Every structure is written in structure tokens, then in C-alpha cells.
Amino acid sequence: MDESKIQIRRREQDEQATQKRAQVLGLQYIDMREVEQSLPLIRDMLTVEEMKQWRMVPLLHGGGSEPYQFGVTSSTPRSVIDEIRAKYDVEGQRTLFSLISHSAYRAMMLRFDPPKKVVYDDIEVAADEQATGEMVARVSEILNGVGSDDVFNYLVSQADRLGASDIHVENQRDTIRIRMRIDGTLHEVAHLRKDRYRVIMATISSHANVSTAANTPQSGHMQQEIFADGASHILNLRVETVPTVYGQDVVMRLFNFDESLLQLDLLGLQPRERAEIDEVISHPRGMVLMVGPTGSGKSTTLYSMLNALNNVERKIITLEDPVEYSIGGVTQIPIDTTRGGSFAEGLRSVLRLDPDVVMVGEIRDQETARTAIQASITGHLVLSSFHANTSAAAFSRMIDLIGVNPIFSSAIRLVIAQRLVRRLHDDTKESYKPDKATRQWLKDVLHDLPDHIDKPNLDEAVLYRPVSSEDAPFGYKGRTVIMEQMVVTDEIQQFLRGDVSDVHTEAIEAAAKKGGMVTLLQAGVLAALKGETSLEEVNRVI
Image (cartoon, rainbow, N blue to C red):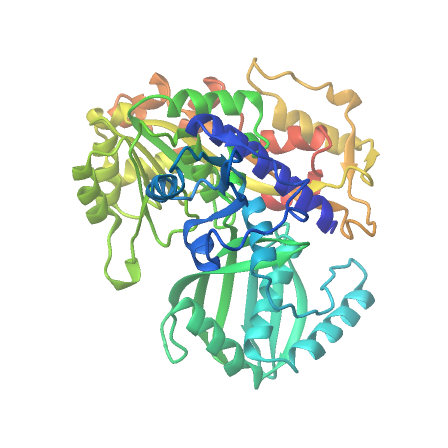
């Protein structure tokens, strides 16, 4: 994996988002990349504790005709800015506040308050079985000889460096196996001695507030600051534990805390897909459902929609189990369903606060479904996730939950099914001509594409396969979104109104395709024909 390119891309996205935010807030924007490592540090205007608490740094020590200048972030409280202005704006002095990115703030704080550094060999994934075995042995030796916090910090920082979505700690008869899911595929990284079990669980329990002695599944969450290449960023980790024959297995899911990356523009959506989302969420009421299995990117898409809606004119409230990303300007409420919390009860409570937009983490039961739909027809835009394979299956399940009801027929406006597939590495992918049987299969899948989609010439179709390289051992690098969007038209509403007697998934999907929907499989095949992914990857995931 090319870490420097990942860091550069993250930083560029952060700066672009900050520049846009500065325009909204009416502040001057400063790109600190050229000076953040050389700017003289001013230590007598704010303490390190104040800089950490208020998420701001001093940039210029004023006096005489020179203004005082501070770099503030989107997390800096407005009250603090007013207090500092009152303190320094005396006797003709001026105080300037300029918006800097969170990356710039963290880079400056690394100079004001440098962390203690521990250096380990990096974990590398490889397609070669022997190289993988040697790497696993080397990492295992390192982790079997260090302290508990070092094991945890090393695994989390390496998972972030490799772009892993989760870390699996699995108890076996004689060892503890550590695996990481990278681009949707699990890779073995270490085997630890059984005596390391208590060491690892002690750290996880203290960080995520889960019990080491529990004999039932548990959920927890925590944050971890990651230092890399002279900068830092914060990860949110969701921790799930389950008791097994040999001890508690743990899965830690990693979420990048950087809200600047939660942008619809960064999801790689097709113009048609983006236009449909923009049109639906621009309305003041209605419901949008995201469906798909765990790890398909539903939360990221929902949070990106929230970010697009987030401004001073809207009140946005979320109900989540747990809160995965923290977004400034949004009221986020954790719902602990393991201790009796209920999405339906929480939703009824927050509706009294007169929100414009509500996000419900997941619709799991009839009560939550009915409450959410009732909210969506009484002047609220409701976003939520739902477990189903396709948008038509989700709509069918929703009818099973709430029943046929004409009042609710106009509530659900958009259902999105989503998957993540591995993206082919552009520098190494290899083109090939599919055989006759594959071409026929492609024609069968794409024969009923809607008219607004340009139909490829499948007789001249070219597909692509992954080729291993040092930069991408498996021929893939990163993942891309495959999306199926069912806009709820009048034809789809008929199923909810009871106008159609034959209510099942296939009938709903047929009506949606007639209305212009591109199915998940069709979207995946089109992505393969564009060279974004391979046909094998599409079939594996979809």
C-alpha cells in the first residue's frame, strides 16, 4: 500500500472541505501545508491544554500595529472566539481568526506537544504464501514480547495504515489468531500465545468499557489517535465481543473520524445516482432507506447525506447504536439497545425537539418502522438503514412490517441498496476479451437496461483482471461503491396502497426496473466493463 499517496489525498480532501466551510462561516481560510512545520511556535498566548480543549492554535503574536492571529477549526466554540477577541481587542489592537483544517491543527499540535514514539516493523500483505508466512511469524514474534497497550496501539495503527475496515481477534485451541479485513478480504497477520489473551482483553475492556468476564455478547466503542508522517487523525472503533469455546472473540471495526471525508462528492457516485439523492434529500419531508449487509458502507453514505444537509438553518438529530462518527452541528444521541434502549422510544422523544432531519441508525422492528414513517409524513426528513439484500426486498420487508397502508404510501421516497467492491489497480490491471459464454451472460444481465443508460456494445466487450504488483499484491487497491437506487414512483406506491394484489420482491423489482432502476448486478457489470473492478469481484460480492 502506498501510504504517502493515501495521506496526501486525505489532506487535500480535508483542505478542500475546510475552504468550503470557511465560506459558510464567513472566516478567512489558510492552507497551512507550506508553513506548519516551520512557523515559529508561540507559547505564551494559550496553554497546550487550552489548545487541545478549544481546538485552536496561536499563529501570530501581535503588538503595536501587528494583529494577533489564531488558527481555529470547525470544532472551536464560538464563545471561546468571543472571549479571546474581548481579551486582545483592547487599545486599538486587532485580533484575526482564520479557519485551518483539522489536519493542520493536528500537525501544529504535534510540534507544541510531541508524542512519545514507538517504532515497529510495518505489517505488509502479500499474495505469495511464503511471504505471508514469514510476515506472520515476524509480527507474531514482535507482539508476543511487548506490553498490552503496545499490542493494541500497534494493531490499530497498522490496520489504519493498511486501510483495514476491521480487526479480528480470534481464540483458537492453542493460539490467538489476528486477522485484518482489507478491501473486503480477510488477511492473517499474527498468531499470539494463549497467555496474551488476558493482556489483549484487559486493554480492550478498559478502552471500550466491556467486561472480560461476560458470558454474553457485548458492544462498546472508543476513539484512538493515530500518528503518521508528521500528522495525526482520530479513529472511531466499534468493539463487538462474543463468548466462544476458548474465550471471547473480538471484532474491532474502524471508522475514520475525519468528518471532511464524509462527503457525497467523495463516494464515486455516478451523476444520475448523485442527482437522485440530491433531489430527494432537498425536500423537507420523506424517508430514505439504506440497505445492505454489514460492512457495505451504509453508514458512510448516510453520514455523507447528513453532511450535505448540515447548515445553520436545519436542526439535525441522530439516534445511533453506537455513534460511529461525530459531526459538528449535529445532535447525536447514543441508543444502548443492549441495556433496554429503543430506537422507537428515542425517536418519539426527539420529535418533540422539532428537528428538520432525523437519522435513525437502524429500523429493526414494527414499532420503529411505524414511528419513523409517521415522522416522515409530518414534516421531517428521515434517514435510516435497514437489513435487506436489495432495494425491492427492503420495500417488501417494510410492507410486511407496517402492512398495506395508503397513508404511508408517499412517505418512503428512496431506497438505496449498496455494496463495496474492490477497485482494480489502474497501473497493473490487464484487459482481455470474454469468451462466448461470458458475453452471452453479460447480454442476459444487461438486456433490460433502462433507456437513459448508454448500452455498451457487448460483441466488442473488454473486461479486466487483477495483476499482482508490489504496490497492490492482489491487483486491487481501494474499494468503490456499487449502488441500486429505487425511486419510489406512483407505480411502486401501489404496492403499499394495496392497489396491487401480487406483493412480492420480484414484482416490486420489475416495477422499479420499468421505472428506470439499474439493479445491483447491472451496476456491478457496468463497473466491470468500465475497468473499475473485475467480473469475478462483482460475482463474489453481488
